[in-house]
Length: 511
Image (cartoon, rainbow, N blue to C red):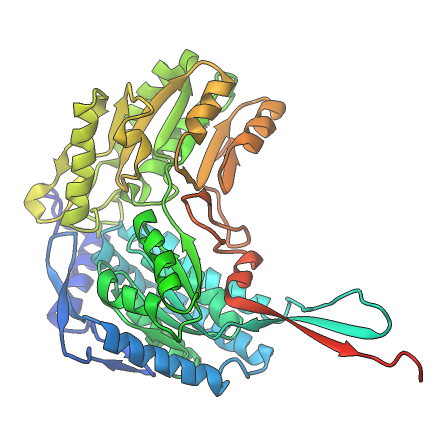
């Protein structure tokens, strides 16, 4: 695919040639990764993996179902029970995971190309953001292995109480399609660092980098069976993994609807731990005392249009003080022009394709709903590049949005920004907190008292002050309310994949 009126030159031509070679030479392998080898589904079924860039068939992918999940879980359980990974010295596990991170970086061009072809994001972002972030996550948790200590409780002289973190056993990791590589690394890093075996179920919409990770982990020295990768549909492979009686915990990132189902599956099975990282409808609040208006405009435009708006933490609700709203909105509309969708394999492209036709229809449906409910579309609002065979939507800004409208309440997962206006701080807080979600928020004010006051009152897992989406693996990621429970990233993620065991020893205090 190329932009209709733009001939391919330079780096764009190079990336297109690489993409063509992958499919023409049949170098892509869509089979599952179980017990250290590529295997077809037990019943030999596959599904088509097509690129959202132009609809091309990339590769048939194994359609994992209950039998495949069972084989993967059994292999993971055996690997855990014989302690081929958990029993290794921390220094050895650290060395293997560091090598895993190195291999991710060494294969950055391949992984970035797979990510872009599979999911539709611009190659510059796959190469400059997704691959390095995944490698850093694995490396950071590798480094944590020999730096996190257990505890001794303050007991009387007659006792010694040891408090130790032990691996849970078999972890089911179910990751979404919007950041396939990064989300996998956020789960694999802490789960593997603490000695667990993992069965990874990538989204059927973007499974290719996860499957490649299995091979790279083996090459790094991870024992067979410790990391299993089973692609498939959520209602088949995902449900089977969540219901499996020999899975000790589920780390899930995805929609709130499926997150509710995950909790139900735990109740129907073995009461496995479920850690959900779910949706968001993040509020971006700008007060009239802000002295960083231009930076705020850039931040909200980047936040909502980056990754085609397919980010759970996208600042999709822009809350503006009425005194600055008109000029601010004009500036955001001007910024939107810089985010017009284009060929994802062109390194100059800032916004790529939505993941598939279903997501395209969902986003366009929300846009139609906004118009029907009386919101005013200031820019965008239409499908783009339809002649390419891919799935593109223009960056879209709606003004005159009311709090009860669907686009103000529901997660769209597309490049659609809703503008709401307020007069007072109390009104801004009521609007911001008037959502079932609580993932992230942002407040822009030059007054430190107001910034702290509002940040404290916001019901969100992360509150950005005078910036948005600055990030690092060292800080936790997760939300309040229906945005989920538990946290990815940081040392806090280790708690999700370990059990606390107390060993209480009686000591004769007299010699």
